[in-house]
Image (cartoon, rainbow, N blue to C red; front, side, top):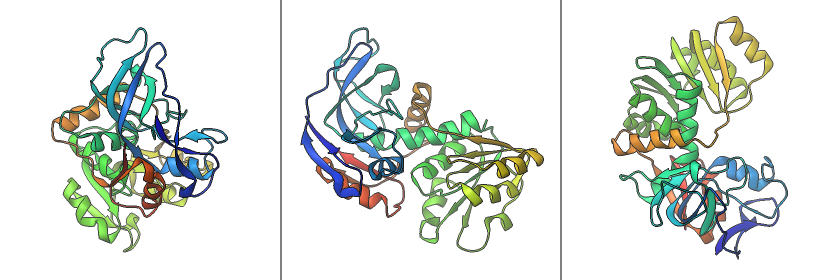
Length: 308
């Protein structure tokens, strides 16, 4: 099979195409012929050596997959050869999604939504599960709550806006000037241009904040939360911020996304019910994985995907 591998850490140009032996599914695994592989910021951090999840190179990046079942390992039920599937297998261990074939745990993939093509389904899992787990699992999202979503035009953010709306929330979202209309069209009830003043002067009485930026930005988010509210952060939160939150009666949740079959099924239901759509900013062929990483670094609206 062909795969985009890296033999050293560094910039996007370390991603090169090479031939590798076809994987063989073990017991309880499924061999998937990859049609699309989503690219996420964590991919770039691992590639550059900032976040050494996979140890020393060589390795194959990628966790988001959409494709077709090529073969079944021993003991696998519920799938047939030819089924269209998607998921985020093995995270944070190597899933080797940037390849024509990958063998993955059968319980970490599900059938692809009927209303999504492979590009959209391949873009969905990591960002979608981050948004769903952050809002629903960690945040305890309920209908009627006021939710603040930062960086709402990004991969996680644009999905989080839609998931929150689908659960009956009132959504306040922050974005840069060029992305405000995009976020409004997602269904956000209020959209704040974060370049024009401090968001803490423009919003109050929030029940739940989804915070992807961390640091001082997370601390400022405490100012807009009600007593009893929840701050869900995708990055580490300082002890000082946790202390202030506790004094204000605010719960802080630091989350890391995990493989989640139930979450994938919920995302697929939302897609098929026309309550969730994945915006793919651009797709690249597998042999342009480096160019795809460089494009993602420009912070486009939505998601970037490899078409395998």
